[in-house]
Image (spheres, rainbow, N blue to C red):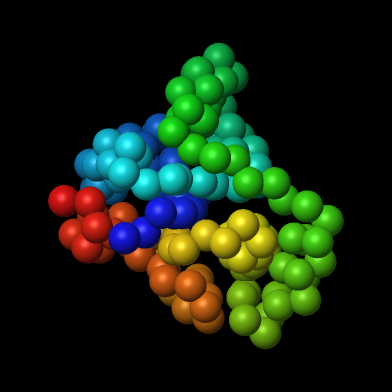
Length: 140
């Protein structure tokens, strides 16, 4: 059983922006939050705020992220996280944000990552699942 599960920014945005065809899987992932210790990074929260604010407004972004933060542990992005991400950039990860997320996971002993961008985490040493696959394997 997975206990410590990281939710990538795209899953948070799928839920809050009601992005189809991903919205239902994001809802189901969050409904399973009592069974898992979900986390995301402070970087994900900042990025999500930006996109929700652009889609709606600042009040909606504030409301949505206050609601979601009750279901998530927010992991710090520390100086060490950034240095490690920069070190593996282009060798293991092509996207800096993903490298930061991955290192936040490693620093916090996260057991798996849920993302729709699994290919971006192809060099991860911890399991990476799409929301749909995670639900099929662990939650439903």
